[in-house]
Length: 168
Image (cartoon, rainbow, N blue to C red; front, top):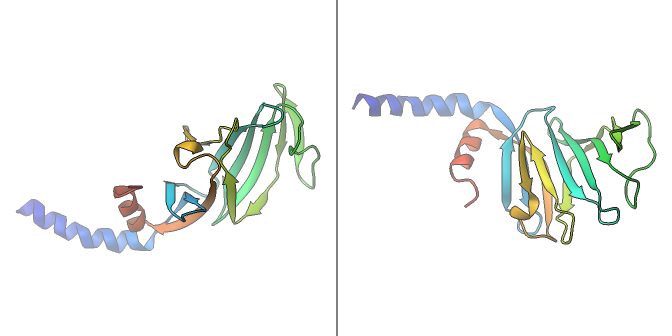
C-alpha cells in the first residue's frame, strides 16, 4: 500500500516538473501520410549524417547536419569525387579541403527549417547516422517516398509518453 501511495504522489510531481521543460527531438515524418516514423531526443549542436551512394559517381557522400535552435543547419559535405549535383565551389566562410582522398566542404552554416528527402530507389541506400546508430531510411519507409526531417520541441511528459507507445 505504501508503494502505491508513493507512486500516486510521484505522478503529480512528474507532470509538474516535466510539463514545463522542453526537449528538442529530431523527428522524421512521412510527407505522404504525416505520420511520425522516428524520433530521438537531441541537443542544440548535436550532429547527424545522411550517407548515401551518389547515383552517377557510385561513391559515398556524407551530408552532415547540425541541430539548431528549432531548425536544422547544413554543416558540411564529404565526398570522394566530383560529379553531377555535388558542390564544387565555396562561398563566404566555407572551406574546402582534401583529406584521405575525400573532398570536405565545411562551415556551410545554411539554416533550414526542415529537410525533405526522397529515399533512393536504386543504389542510394540513404542511411541516417546519429549518436553511433546507423538507420537505413528504407527501414522507415519504402524507397521512393519523401521524408521530412525536423526539430520539434516536446515537453518531457510528451516525450516520455511518445516513447511508451512509439510507432505502432
